[in-house]
Amino acid sequence: MQEHHFKLQFQDYSADFVLGGNHTLYELAEFIIKTIGFDFDHTFEFCDNLKNPYRSKERYTLFADIRNNPDHDDPGVKQTPVSAVFRPRRKMVFHFDYGDDWYFLITCTAVKESAAKRRFKKVLGTTGTPPEQYPDCEE
Image (cartoon, rainbow, N blue to C red; front, top):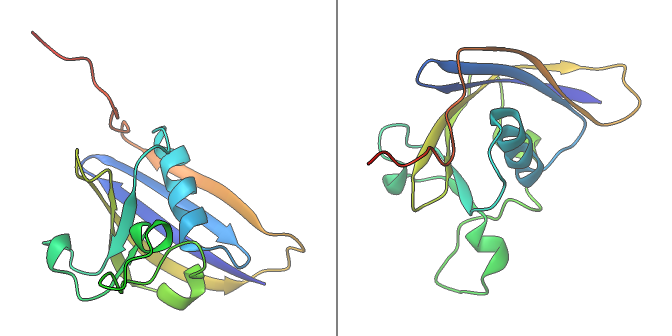
């Protein structure tokens, strides 16, 4: 079994985590959101253009899984394995919630062989304060 090691970065917050086994991009997204402390209640995508995700040449979207649209040819996230997209030093933007436009930089820091017998997800450490998904409105 392989382990994919990742670093998530957003402003002054970062998290290092590992996924062991053949997880999908959907499961990666779900774990990222859980690690940050957000509600997993919006659509999302993984994009290769780090400066302007809307101009990405390679993108994996939840829309591809939930819409039957022949004009929308991006690969989905529910069937795409993490191992098909991420290799060491590969960076992508995890774009969550198209209304609020949360952009998290995700870097695959390593891919290693694991002796684990089961799939797993584990946070190795965090630094800084995670963002608030729905901060109180100031008046």
